[in-house]
Length: 91
View 1 (tube, rainbow, N blue to C red):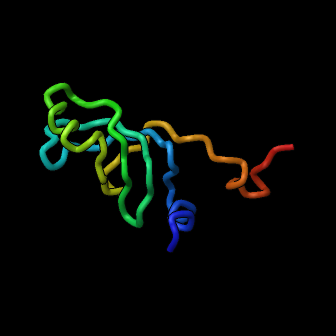
View 2 (spheres, rainbow, N blue to C red):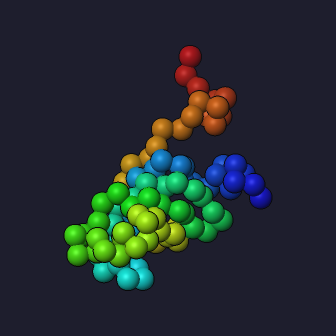
């Protein structure tokens, strides 16, 4: 399955803002933006985190892989017009 196919099959979109639980060396939940969609996980750029987790976030290069079933979408990214189904386009 190509990246594009995985993206279409997922209920997530690149650019979605999400809340992810603490995991690994991160002690508190964090907020991030979806950069890449995998089969069961998302590559997320960490945008907000607890100050006590900052050294760990820096070591992780502000990126994390999170499981889809563990996150909550806070804000969906706008869907590009090319991905809208014909019936969804308002004229």
